[in-house]
Length: 195
Image 1: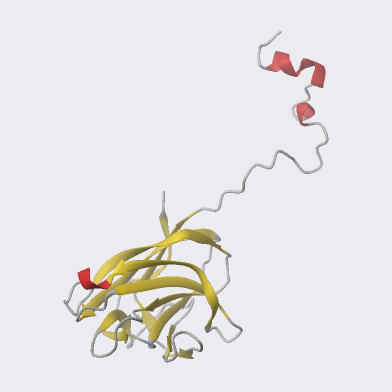
Image 2: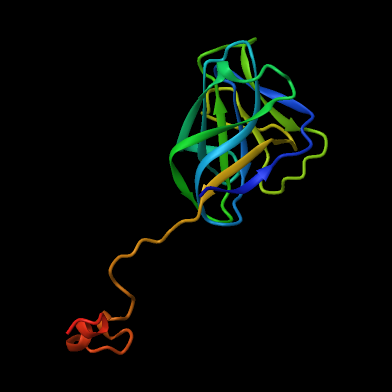
């Protein structure tokens, strides 16, 4: 079952719009390694922005989003609320992606099919943001380069699941798994009650 990891959900007192080449991002730093499977964002629409894409990207040494999407998903922006207080919407991120602990990533949103004055609005805290693991970012060229928006934070939740290490059939340093519990190979059948 999915659980919430990183988040910032209170204090929103403004917004920034995403449209055409204007993209928005919130960087975040997981304290626990996990597989991110969806994000919840506090959004509203102005006009009919069409398909809105949310994705996860790595960040560079300066903390800006970089590279291609690690995973992504979409939502129909035309169905979002027009109430400027916004509402929370979950966007499933395809197959998801395994995130490392103490590593900064970015949640990126865009609505490239429309131009101002139509846009998707992402609620943010510009007065007293307190999320220590990242900050708001913006791009004016469709995600090719990024700038810090200021000491602001967007409203977001990072949802996912624990990373399960798969069984490989091997145990480090063990050459005879039958002897793990002190059982000789010849007697392994008897362990299961089979003569």
